[in-house]
Length: 397
Image (cartoon, rainbow, N blue to C red):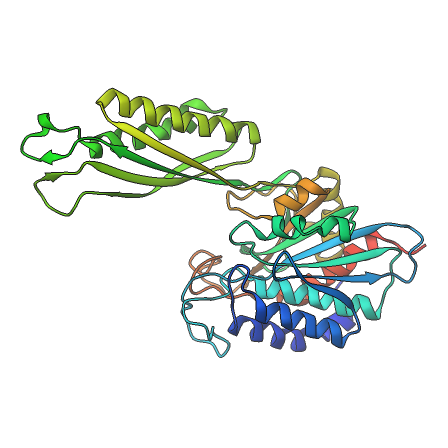
């Protein structure tokens, strides 16, 4: 079905809301402007809500025309911005130096607000809907903070759903992964300690640069030779520091760090173990030592297959069967909605937003780019998706 007229008619108003939020970005657990804005709109529309859950989170509750089903679901949108100086020319560019909505969470918030407004005026469902406006997705801490504050105890959900704009896919197309959607995100720090000295006398030193180089090279074999080729994984070293800048000094230590991405929790643990073993073993072979710290971060976003299939059917009702892709590759990016999916069944979809005339098609203007901007033409589709999901998950009979 096309976007219903009542939702299409909201487009201009909610585009203005989105651009207001875009101009006032705030990062993790500092989302006072956006959470206050959300609360003000909910109050205007007579919707019951609680503020301050998980720090700056907001949860609103809507009751259907009937509630006899006893069912309840959660719809989640993230609100936080990024520490990125915004570039480009537009009337609604960020007013906050060094911060921008570079991932479209301003758009996610507005789409869920649009669904709240429509459903409050047209409660054509049987049950309860909890609208979850979440802080701190970018740090991977917001979902867990809300859950630690009793999210699912205060607001029971039989299932929970999330979405993200996807600038790598054309507007009007939707990707639904039937299992893994986003990856586990872990990081590691390794410090190699050797014995510094004069660079003209390498035999009197234990060169930590050579040791680090050997370890970095060998870490690449963890994936290429140590994991099942049908089980995706990434090990990337992304930073290395060592030396004083002098040409003739061998430093005493080198530090490097990186990231690990997986979908499988067992493989996640295996890779951690191999990094620790290889670093210690190689360093020891050179007469150096390795201090390794591994940081478990964001959990993978793993869709429930039945819930994912349901979301695909909802999306098909909005954009048409041919525009729903259930075979798209999952992303190796991170998303802390996975924590909620560990607590409740549900699914997370990606809604395309790339405009046909976008020459980058999401490449240089993709997520976290200083030139990124949310496509406001996605707002009606996102609102329609949320409304249709509620009507299909909690049907009136």
